[in-house]
Image 1 (cartoon, rainbow, N blue to C red):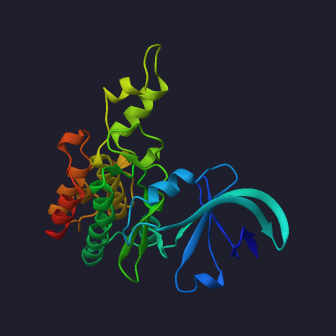
Image 2 (image 1 turned 45 degrees about the vertical axis):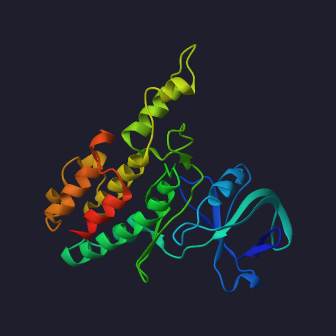
Amino acid sequence: MYSISQYHFHEFKITPGHRANYATLCNSEFKTNQWGMKYSPANNYSREYKILSLFSHPQIPGRYKEGNDIMYKDGKSVIAQNYLIMTHFGGEDIVEYYRKKDLPDQREIGHVIQYFSHATLPLQHIHSKGYIHSDIKPGHLILNPCTGTVALIDLECTIKTGEIICGMSKEYASPEQKQMIRLLRNLTDGENEKSVLQKVQLNPTSDLYSIGLILYQVLTQKLWQEANIPPKEINKTVPDKLDRIILGLLEEDPNNRIYSAETLKAELEAV
């Protein structure tokens, strides 16, 4: 048994590419709700805790508490940990779920469309508040195939539209996110973040590009960056309309992309 402060758990998960461990709590007072804990000795979760307070949506984690305390294993102290308690969503990384299967056939593609249509709802909520998730990747889209729900988690990199990026996952980042990172890394004398924002700004279409990358990967079991061909050329059962939607999400120029989560939902439902 592990514990941090008054919170207890039996085991925890270490995910490659994530800077925090994660555990589902087993406290008796949480019987009616499932709560999870992110914890790390190095990461501070006060920013994410504040960000979560901005949103109230059934597909976005609700915050409970953040703090710092000693982690114990079977009553013996291990190390001090920063932690964040929030709603736990049962399910699986959406790409991992489909990686275990054959390429989606016509019937399964119907389910994929439903899942990604559902995933637009928390995005609509975040974007309507003037924010961008800015770190959408498979591990942050948690699919519960039993209920058909998709949760959007890990909002630690969420920023206001037009702000400087504070983190991303390179494999699932938009071209403009990568451009902003390059500019920030190569600031010359006299330049600052303001000069970067004069050259590139992020808006909700950055999140939609990331959604396009994940949808492409689910339908083809390949990365767009490696294949770089329409999904229908890999998976012949992809409908023409869906093929066009994905390519519309993956436009290099954000001005040419599908421009809102609401529009994406409507287009998916019209396939």
